[in-house]
Length: 219
Image (cartoon, rainbow, N blue to C red; front, side, top):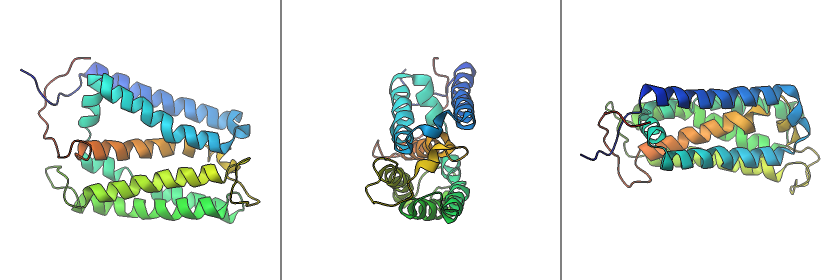
Protein backbone atom coordinates (compact mmCIF):
# COMPACT_ATOMS: atom_id res chain seq x y z
CA UNK A 1 0.00 0.00 0.00
CA UNK A 2 1.56 3.37 -1.00
CA UNK A 3 2.35 5.85 1.75
CA UNK A 4 3.23 9.54 1.59
CA UNK A 5 5.81 9.65 4.37
CA UNK A 6 8.34 7.09 5.65
CA UNK A 7 11.08 7.49 8.24
CA UNK A 8 14.59 6.71 6.99
CA UNK A 9 16.35 3.60 8.35
CA UNK A 10 19.20 4.10 10.79
CA UNK A 11 21.86 3.30 8.18
CA UNK A 12 20.60 6.04 5.87
CA UNK A 13 20.30 8.50 8.73
CA UNK A 14 23.90 7.83 9.80
CA UNK A 15 25.08 8.27 6.21
CA UNK A 16 23.30 11.62 5.95
CA UNK A 17 24.82 12.81 9.24
CA UNK A 18 28.25 11.70 7.99
CA UNK A 19 27.80 13.69 4.77
CA UNK A 20 26.98 16.88 6.67
CA UNK A 21 29.79 16.19 9.12
CA UNK A 22 32.23 15.73 6.25
CA UNK A 23 31.04 19.00 4.73
CA UNK A 24 31.67 20.80 8.02
CA UNK A 25 35.10 19.20 8.47
CA UNK A 26 36.17 20.01 4.92
CA UNK A 27 34.90 23.58 5.27
CA UNK A 28 36.77 24.07 8.54
CA UNK A 29 39.97 22.62 7.09
CA UNK A 30 39.80 24.83 4.00
CA UNK A 31 38.87 27.83 6.12
CA UNK A 32 41.78 27.42 8.54
CA UNK A 33 44.37 26.41 5.93
CA UNK A 34 44.39 29.81 4.22
CA UNK A 35 43.67 28.28 0.81
CA UNK A 36 40.56 30.42 0.44
CA UNK A 37 42.24 33.70 1.36
CA UNK A 38 42.83 34.69 -2.26
CA UNK A 39 39.56 33.34 -3.63
CA UNK A 40 37.12 36.11 -4.51
CA UNK A 41 34.49 36.48 -1.80
CA UNK A 42 31.84 36.90 -4.48
CA UNK A 43 32.61 33.41 -5.79
CA UNK A 44 32.35 31.87 -2.32
CA UNK A 45 29.07 33.65 -1.64
CA UNK A 46 27.61 32.65 -5.00
CA UNK A 47 28.65 29.03 -4.53
CA UNK A 48 27.30 28.98 -0.98
CA UNK A 49 24.00 30.46 -2.11
CA UNK A 50 23.29 27.89 -4.83
CA UNK A 51 25.43 24.73 -4.63
CA UNK A 52 24.32 23.21 -1.27
CA UNK A 53 20.66 24.04 -1.97
CA UNK A 54 20.87 22.46 -5.43
CA UNK A 55 22.63 19.33 -4.16
CA UNK A 56 20.12 18.86 -1.35
CA UNK A 57 17.19 19.54 -3.69
CA UNK A 58 18.43 16.84 -6.06
CA UNK A 59 18.92 14.45 -3.13
CA UNK A 60 15.42 15.28 -1.87
CA UNK A 61 13.94 14.55 -5.29
CA UNK A 62 15.90 11.40 -6.05
CA UNK A 63 16.76 9.72 -2.73
CA UNK A 64 13.71 8.58 -0.73
CA UNK A 65 15.70 8.17 2.49
CA UNK A 66 16.97 11.76 2.33
CA UNK A 67 13.48 13.03 1.55
CA UNK A 68 12.16 11.16 4.59
CA UNK A 69 15.02 12.51 6.71
CA UNK A 70 14.10 16.08 5.77
CA UNK A 71 10.39 15.46 6.30
CA UNK A 72 11.17 14.03 9.72
CA UNK A 73 12.72 17.31 10.95
CA UNK A 74 10.34 19.06 13.40
CA UNK A 75 9.25 22.53 12.35
CA UNK A 76 10.07 23.91 15.79
CA UNK A 77 13.65 22.61 15.48
CA UNK A 78 14.37 24.02 12.02
CA UNK A 79 12.85 27.33 13.10
CA UNK A 80 14.76 27.60 16.39
CA UNK A 81 18.02 26.76 14.58
CA UNK A 82 17.81 30.21 12.97
CA UNK A 83 18.37 31.83 16.40
CA UNK A 84 22.22 31.67 16.25
CA UNK A 85 22.07 34.21 13.43
CA UNK A 86 22.06 36.81 16.22
CA UNK A 87 25.68 35.85 16.94
CA UNK A 88 26.64 35.94 13.26
CA UNK A 89 25.01 39.31 12.68
CA UNK A 90 26.67 40.82 15.74
CA UNK A 91 30.04 39.41 14.68
CA UNK A 92 29.78 40.94 11.19
CA UNK A 93 28.84 44.34 12.62
CA UNK A 94 31.89 44.10 14.90
CA UNK A 95 34.08 43.37 11.88
CA UNK A 96 32.57 46.39 10.14
CA UNK A 97 33.55 48.53 13.11
CA UNK A 98 37.10 47.25 12.65
CA UNK A 99 37.03 48.46 9.03
CA UNK A 100 37.13 44.97 7.51
CA UNK A 101 33.72 44.91 5.82
CA UNK A 102 31.79 47.42 3.70
CA UNK A 103 28.80 49.13 5.30
CA UNK A 104 26.47 48.06 2.48
CA UNK A 105 27.06 44.41 3.31
CA UNK A 106 27.64 44.54 7.06
CA UNK A 107 24.59 46.63 7.99
CA UNK A 108 22.16 44.71 5.78
CA UNK A 109 23.45 41.32 6.89
CA UNK A 110 24.04 42.23 10.52
CA UNK A 111 20.68 43.88 11.18
CA UNK A 112 18.64 41.31 9.21
CA UNK A 113 20.39 38.39 10.92
CA UNK A 114 19.83 39.91 14.35
CA UNK A 115 16.13 40.47 13.60
CA UNK A 116 15.68 36.94 12.25
CA UNK A 117 17.66 35.40 15.09
CA UNK A 118 15.83 37.28 17.85
CA UNK A 119 12.43 36.42 16.38
CA UNK A 120 13.23 32.73 15.72
CA UNK A 121 12.30 31.45 19.18
CA UNK A 122 9.05 33.50 19.37
CA UNK A 123 8.24 32.23 15.86
CA UNK A 124 8.75 28.64 17.00
CA UNK A 125 6.49 29.24 20.01
CA UNK A 126 3.66 31.24 18.46
CA UNK A 127 3.66 30.23 14.78
CA UNK A 128 3.81 26.46 15.30
CA UNK A 129 1.24 24.47 17.26
CA UNK A 130 2.11 22.06 20.05
CA UNK A 131 1.45 19.24 17.60
CA UNK A 132 4.07 20.73 15.27
CA UNK A 133 1.70 22.16 12.66
CA UNK A 134 2.28 25.62 11.14
CA UNK A 135 -0.06 28.46 12.03
CA UNK A 136 -0.93 31.65 10.19
CA UNK A 137 2.21 33.71 9.73
CA UNK A 138 4.59 30.74 9.64
CA UNK A 139 5.17 30.93 5.89
CA UNK A 140 5.63 34.72 5.73
CA UNK A 141 8.14 34.64 8.61
CA UNK A 142 10.27 32.00 6.92
CA UNK A 143 10.02 33.70 3.54
CA UNK A 144 11.21 36.93 5.16
CA UNK A 145 14.03 35.11 6.96
CA UNK A 146 15.12 33.31 3.78
CA UNK A 147 14.87 36.55 1.79
CA UNK A 148 17.24 38.20 4.26
CA UNK A 149 19.81 35.44 3.68
CA UNK A 150 19.55 35.79 -0.10
CA UNK A 151 19.78 39.59 0.08
CA UNK A 152 22.81 39.32 2.34
CA UNK A 153 24.57 37.02 -0.10
CA UNK A 154 23.78 39.29 -3.02
CA UNK A 155 25.03 42.36 -1.16
CA UNK A 156 28.28 40.53 -0.41
CA UNK A 157 28.64 39.58 -4.08
CA UNK A 158 27.97 43.13 -5.25
CA UNK A 159 30.60 44.51 -2.87
CA UNK A 160 33.18 41.81 -3.64
CA UNK A 161 36.63 42.53 -4.97
CA UNK A 162 36.63 43.12 -8.73
CA UNK A 163 32.88 43.71 -8.92
CA UNK A 164 32.24 46.17 -6.06
CA UNK A 165 29.64 48.12 -8.03
CA UNK A 166 28.91 50.38 -5.05
CA UNK A 167 32.40 51.89 -5.42
CA UNK A 168 33.33 51.47 -1.77
CA UNK A 169 37.04 51.41 -0.93
CA UNK A 170 36.42 48.43 1.35
CA UNK A 171 35.21 45.22 -0.33
CA UNK A 172 33.77 42.05 1.16
CA UNK A 173 37.03 40.19 0.50
CA UNK A 174 37.54 39.67 4.25
CA UNK A 175 34.84 37.00 3.96
CA UNK A 176 37.44 34.82 2.24
CA UNK A 177 39.70 34.76 5.33
CA UNK A 178 39.42 32.65 8.48
CA UNK A 179 37.15 32.61 10.44
CA UNK A 180 34.71 34.70 8.39
CA UNK A 181 34.99 32.39 5.39
CA UNK A 182 32.98 29.81 7.34
CA UNK A 183 29.98 32.08 6.69
CA UNK A 184 29.77 31.65 2.91
CA UNK A 185 31.00 28.04 2.76
CA UNK A 186 29.07 26.45 5.64
CA UNK A 187 27.14 28.57 8.15
CA UNK A 188 25.14 30.64 5.67
CA UNK A 189 24.24 27.66 3.45
CA UNK A 190 23.11 25.68 6.51
CA UNK A 191 20.77 28.51 7.51
CA UNK A 192 19.35 28.46 3.97
CA UNK A 193 18.85 24.69 4.15
CA UNK A 194 17.01 25.02 7.48
CA UNK A 195 14.72 27.62 5.88
CA UNK A 196 14.03 25.41 2.87
CA UNK A 197 13.31 22.44 5.14
CA UNK A 198 10.89 24.56 7.20
CA UNK A 199 9.07 25.82 4.12
CA UNK A 200 8.92 22.32 2.62
CA UNK A 201 7.62 20.66 5.78
CA UNK A 202 5.33 23.61 6.42
CA UNK A 203 3.59 22.89 3.15
CA UNK A 204 4.52 26.02 1.19
CA UNK A 205 5.58 24.02 -1.87
CA UNK A 206 2.74 21.51 -1.55
CA UNK A 207 -0.01 24.02 -0.81
CA UNK A 208 -0.88 22.48 2.56
CA UNK A 209 0.77 20.82 5.54
CA UNK A 210 1.22 17.07 5.11
CA UNK A 211 0.63 14.94 8.18
CA UNK A 212 3.27 12.29 8.79
CA UNK A 213 2.88 8.57 9.38
CA UNK A 214 6.04 6.89 10.61
CA UNK A 215 7.07 3.69 8.79
CA UNK A 216 10.44 2.58 7.47
CA UNK A 217 11.72 3.71 4.09
CA UNK A 218 14.19 1.85 1.85
CA UNK A 219 17.80 3.06 1.70
